[in-house]
Length: 327
Image 1 (tube, one colour):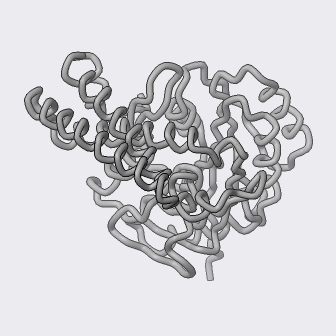
Image 2 (cartoon, rainbow, N blue to C red):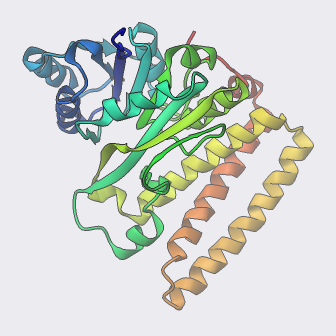
């Protein structure tokens, strides 16, 4: 009987000015139980100004796993991810972030999914929080979810579906050919603008190409969440970014006319007034979800700004409609 050969995996970690956390992340991947000769680690330094390079060099000297340092000067996590994907040698590209701690069985468990269906293009598992400090009650009630990149809704077991299960790029394995056919990750934040929908956009492209999505609860990673993210200011910013991402997604799918964009902007103004009113009344009555209503005012303010730019900036519209972000 022929011995099964595990696919080679490339672990890709984009990093920007998180040298202290990055070392913890790298160490957790060095300690994977996946065969040491079957995976590599690529650190894509996205123009950091701290000692990121020195941290990578330190772990290169200690690791039995090959670690490659890549400097990507173009600001934007999509540039870092996509550039690293181009130089990766793995059949499976595994993407995570520089503030994560991987369980030792993460790679073994996530790779098993790809043997279940040849059309499985992308896979994920559970993302649980590692809090820097005790979170306030409202964070636990309202933000124990995607607002803090926590993914714990699917419970135990294995799933393979023909729709996006809610895959986040902090814990996402992608079949190499699917990644390139899909044109890589769409843009997210840059040094000046929050452009688009990142992994959501890539997942939409994968669905269009006929790929499926997998989930294995035993593939587990922890997200290091600092106290600075357990604040209303952070939630407001996070929801504003989501507003930009949603505008990007919807425009790519519909290519609205200027008249349609204006109608949408009018609706956003109404939504801002509604949520501002709700936030005020809920604070008075001490209802905890006023936090979400305040966040939604920032969400719709961001959508107004984004759609106005779509109306008046031809180059911006062309940027939004771009498909391939690898080349």
